Length: 77
Image (tube, rainbow, N blue to C red; front, side, top):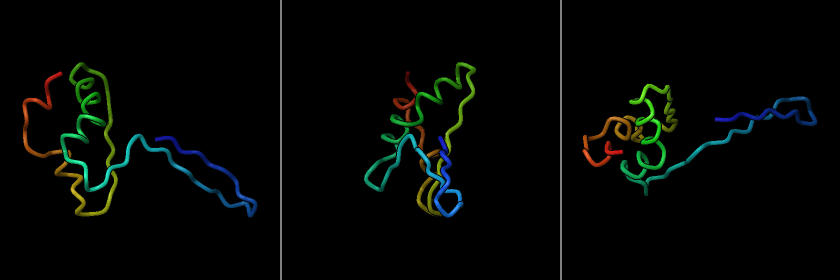
């Protein structure tokens, strides 16, 4: 995530953030994994460090998305 800081006219700091992806309730776990996580997971299995950071409202399903059921087709390269 990139964070850009800008000074406003009043001298306070304004923060803007850039996200790789943003999902709503219409996406399923497979779509999210394939689009945002698979490349990072596969690289980590090759010894490359990676981080997947998920942010959202409590109860929105972040843990389920990260730890949901096992599917062999998701893990295939």
